[in-house]
Image (cartoon, rainbow, N blue to C red; front, top):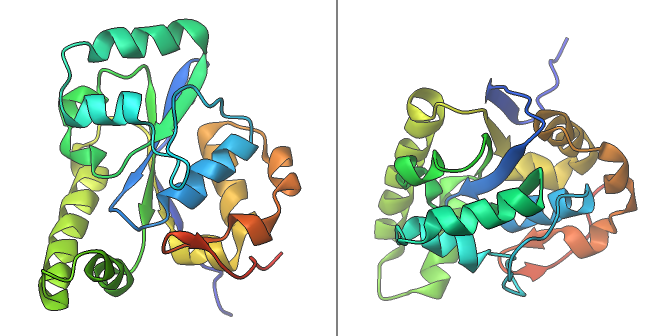
Amino acid sequence: MTAFNDGCIAIRRGHFEQRTIVVTGIGRSGTTAMIRSLYKMGLPKTGKLTAATNDDHDIGKAIVNRAGDLKERIDRRNAAHDVWGFKWHLLWQRHRELRMLRNPVLIVMSRDSVSIAKRAWHSDKSVPVTRWIEQVEDWQRELYRFALREAQMPVALVSFEKLVMKPATVLRFVSDFVSLPFGGVDEINYEDHRYVDGQHTARFEK
C-alpha cells in the first residue's frame, strides 16, 4: 500500500484568535501562489502590494531593513485587524523582528533547488548557474534549520510542487493550519492562480 504524500508538514501548531499569518521562503519558491490563495480564503490585504508578486513593502521591507518605526506599523495593523498577514522572502533571517509580530503563524514554501537556481540565473546571468545552486542550497539549509529548531512559533513547510499538482489537498491543509475557511478556495480560478516563474501558465489540476 502506497502512502499519500501531500507535501505538507506542520512543525509546530498554534491557534490564536488574534494572529499574523506570514508566508516566506526562498525567492521563486511559490510564495506568491500561496499568499494569493490565502487572500481568497479571506485574509485581508492590509498594505500596498506589488502587482506581480503581492509583496508587502510596508511591512516586509521594514522587517528586512529593521526600520525604526516597525513596531508602529505593526501596531496600526493589529488595531485594524484581529487577523492579517503578508508575504516576503528571506524573513527567517530576521528572528527578532518576526517575534515582534502578534502571534505569528508561518507558512514556509519549499521548492526544488534546481528550479529556484535556474530561475535566479535567468534573472542574473552574471552569476554562474552552478553558483546559484550552491547559494540556494545554503539558503535551504538555513531555512530548514530555522523551521525545525529556531522558530518559537507555529510553522508549516509546504511543497510548491504539491501545490501545483494537488491544490485542493494542499490548501485544505493550509486552511486548517492558519484557521481560515477553506470554502473560499473553491472560487479560485486555478487557471489564473498557477503562478510559475513570474507568470501565469497552464491550469492547476482540479
